[in-house]
Length: 341
Ligand code: TLP
Image 1 (cartoon, rainbow, N blue to C red):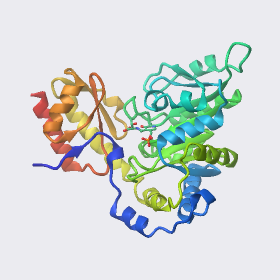
Image 2 (image 1 turned 180 degrees about the vertical axis):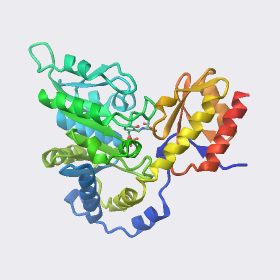
Image 3 (image 1 turned 60 degrees about the vertical axis):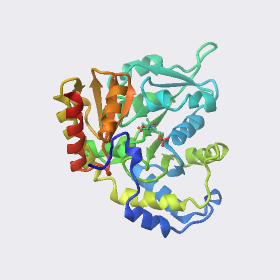
């Protein structure tokens, strides 16, 4: 029997031996006092990599996004964002809970809200209308199938926002996947954004952690909000050590995950009962439309040792990552072929 092939998410990746070595030897201190040298090194590296003044290690991508919203807004402000983004769909209404903002959600095509739509809705605020304070973008866009937002589009949205005094937060949970797919540096994709969150714990394979980047003043305030939310940690250099290894060793290899996702998608697209919009397969995700209820397909695949997620009633999501090799992809294709028969 082939080992279990876990395609539910790139969050299931386990740390590499090099990460574990770095973690066990990490130099640590109390990060609440700013005295953890490994955390400080990771934050400096990350800020430099994304071309921002400063960075903050946070326990999760969700916390990074929510801290950013809290810092950019005041209660009653409005945030514009696409209706399928992670902040809207999968953060349990945290922006309402924590920041008391109004999320004004907009229809999108593959994660893209036309710039004119943002332009129509940005409002300075008056006696009736809340002021638009923030636009959030997501790159790569998860619910759209891991698609990459084009560099030019990101720039245009940022320019529009800034012309109206509106800030931009980029949910870059998988920003390095986008950068590798486009063949550009991550800092280029982050250039116009006032704050950027990226995850270490997804394709970069760290056990825990995300990074929030922005101006020095933004990060200073983010640090305060992180403490309020209970996200300030002590000898967290143990985790940051894995992050430093990830930034050195895990970025370029994301291209392998993208190639494997492509292979999976092309094979499954030909099977009866399944369809895949191959144009959306740009990074490490494959969204498969199923004629049968997705739940049933997921259960059948599970009995064959392939794990994936039913994200919508007739859609399942497959995510490739460093713990899925070519043989696993072959095995997963065979399992899909059996289920299709
Ligand atoms: N995404 C998870 C699930 O929550 C759906 C996954 O398996 O893909 N932004 C984006 C775009 C994300 O995809 C995720 C996680 C997050 C933020 C939140 O990161 P964490 O899980 O670290 O809070």
